[in-house]
Image (cartoon, rainbow, N blue to C red; front, side, top):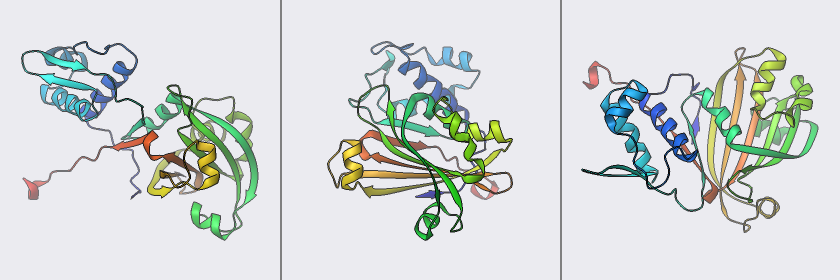
Length: 253
């Protein structure tokens, strides 16, 4: 599955409300077994309509975080047992949450020149210089790595290496801060794959296990390829949720 949408549109209100409620549940502000505030209270809290609140709660139900019972209310459930990390992205500004929720433990940083194979993989001309940062990404909820990560940074911005380990922000944010560029588009590609022996050992899974390969390409306002992040996830440790809203026009009314 490949998406080249810029991810800059403002997400629907129910997505924002659902995300805030999920954050509150994960932070323990709504403990397991407790009731969420009433629809009226949530409408007032978020300044939205009852329809918006109901749609947000429906999303929580779909993820197994709450149950609804007439005459009782909406009860917070224990999250599903081993937790695959769930990433929700509607706009570029959602991406830093992924970095805040996880930590990247780097194992190698090297300079390289893209050969034909790598150039095809990254979507760049052969011979281009890149800085490659390799590591394992972890959540705070377990000792097993959730992903094997390779981040390729355009060689023109290789000086960012000295800021990577000391920062808990996305690399593209460091590039914007230190080089004055602006990321305006993120191209995303998700593929099903199997995990080879070497990667399986690092991820602590059986060779041949199902995996998800998620590649993000970050482009500047000049359409320059700035960064490519390649993440390999064991299939049971990651889920990706995206919201696409249908634009209703007169022809569909």
